[in-house]
Length: 117
Image (tube, rainbow, N blue to C red; front, side, top):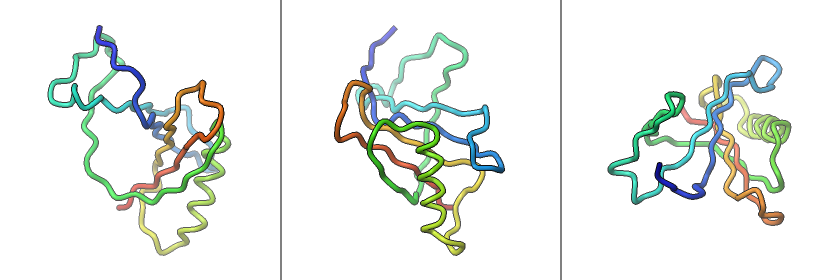
């Protein structure tokens, strides 16, 4: 019952299949605004959970435009290639992040994050 407005980033946890495509299971995460951090409102929908994201170190790549699943998959593959075989990161998921509201036509920011192990 509390309006919190747009948060950034909107983060989608992608669980890649063998071919790199997204599995049906994805998790969408929204940042709780600062004024609600200490005492977040309780969700009334059972499918909504409040989780605390632990500190992490990430490998990241950034790109523009209206990002689609294929874009995130493409940039995840590019990031993987850029890191080579020496980088140690979680292979079972990666994070797809968007920073802009849908009505922003130009200067959009999207990122793919790999979480360092």
